[in-house]
Image 1 (cartoon, rainbow, N blue to C red):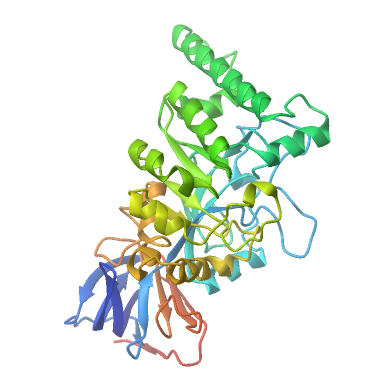
Image 2: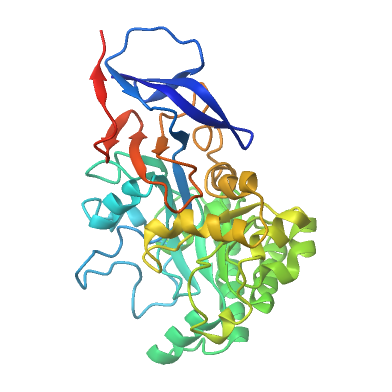
Length: 387
């Protein structure tokens, strides 16, 4: 199907240009400009509304829990190391949270297991449309989630397992990674696959540098522990949450470590959130750190992603970088910047149409396009049949 967004303001380099057109054909953006004349299936008169790339939440657990139920598949309760867990086997795409994400303008997200365990499992990138996670799958193995600080400590103490201190959690992660290194060497020297280890197999892409460690850490000390482990084992690393990352802005910039920051709207319900500030994004970006914002759904409602960007602006961040923190930058951090995050020819047809400026909380999300699938949420949007 072909769709043209007509008479619309589109974003480019942080600025909105009026009276533009965007053509989507077979799920892909094929033309962008003010002078497009082509027969299409659907024409949308956008009335100078604001069109941006579909929003990207770079850290979520969406679909692994189910709204209004106890159907929680985010983590194993009695395990310490579960790198073999894959979100695709637990995501429920008909969960109401996926519809909420679409109505919020979110078209892509990284889905992770819970951050309760030292090594929690695989993270996958997918679109928010479709009745099956396989339909919108972008990258199945996009990193291994590891956790530092209070949550894995609390889980370990509750389950009466060995890792009840930060030192023990870090030591156990190192031990697991050493075992994987030995397993990798042993596997190279053997032709038989009869002794394969399911957990170690899941960690091989991490050890080989093919995917990053996605390190959940709030406090500066926990962030530094994650960085030390990453450097000891020559791992790629992304800091997730990063409540106190702004205290390490220069270090993170020097080491070129990106941060998926948030959820910033959460109150200081634990001591490790005590240094939370809406100024974090500006401090980090000013230092040269690449930052994406997250609402950590269902930690906070998925609709709060755009609000987090608006709050960052209220605390000093410019609008261009705030919008980039929920579009361009998460695409780059997730390694999918050649497909999503921009309105550009050849990119996926993921577009969000707002009644006003996207960072104005009064603006409504009126229409959404994901891979060419059109969702209309406002009676003010008229979709006409083309020729």
